[in-house]
View: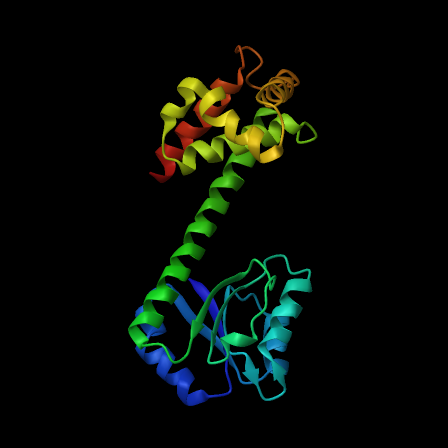
Length: 232
């Protein structure tokens, strides 16, 4: 369940948004309502908030103050923010990656609903991918991969790339199908990516796989198979 905070001093509008829009989205729960910047920051600083519905014009300041506070904070998990305001013209660039949508209050309710639903689905997908990534990291560590090697990161990214594309056949020509993407991302040659991955794999000692001819493809295939069996 996504724990949400609404920041808006127009409580009549808040009630309308909740009853006609947010109440229709199953996995979002409005845990908190704040009517000004001070209240909002107190709630954010003392609670785990997943999503903020944020107006920009507030009695004691601007919603932009809240965005700046969240952006500059050292929260373990920063809340996503959907700006829901009549004053979209106040928005500037580089507000932060956690701004996932900007919606006008005067738009039709059904349009607002569809935009919020799309944003919530994106949050759910991102959270799911994070859990997949954590599983992959756990498995690589258990096998004995050392994260001081760049190749370990490249293997993680290779597994995530194949899973995201839902195509295990990419393993058939992994250098062409996947290492090309990894090399472009890191501005390295494909040979550099391959060499680092092999170096990382060859560094493994004293684990359950030492009796097996451990290869990157073997590791990637086994972890992908586990993920697919568990989540698909």
